[in-house]
Image (cartoon, rainbow, N blue to C red; front, side):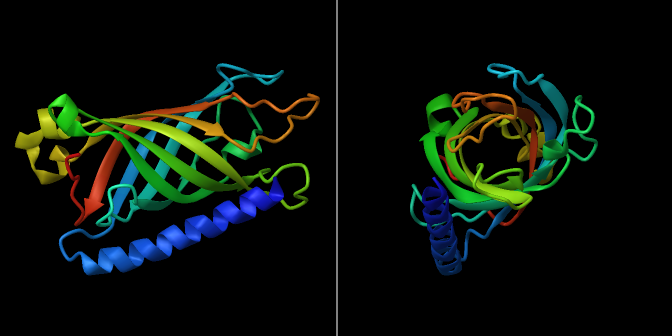
Length: 211
């Protein structure tokens, strides 16, 4: 499993280097910077002796549009600055870094501009990550995400200006594909997604391309 994480990290770095090259060739589309405040909830489906928790979450995401529909590298970070409803949960009030690629699933053209569905594949660098063989505080894990974005700004807030017209409401489900053992539990939990909801505020020169 450690080898899988290392290979995935190399793939993420390769995607990022290709993105820099392709965005440089596209003068009309620069990186898109997203500020995404919202709520995070975990252990709400399969807790494995852990209590579900919720907290205020802040994500920072940078996307690199390219000429290739299936290639949209992304890097970012997320943190719960006030922790979660479980006191002392260090895994959720320390920063988490991520990098990967965003694969399109359903474009706004199919929903008259209302909805976009994506499937990002991400490498997370987190406190306590990396499995039982990682003896450092931080480690890498691979996450699959199902991301739904509702384009409320474009459909409902266009009269308030360009910034408000690009605001989205989002709902994500994230699943760790390389889960680690939970303390006191013999088996790993292969289905315990994390839910995130909130609003997405884009900055920069990139534009959402209809799909």
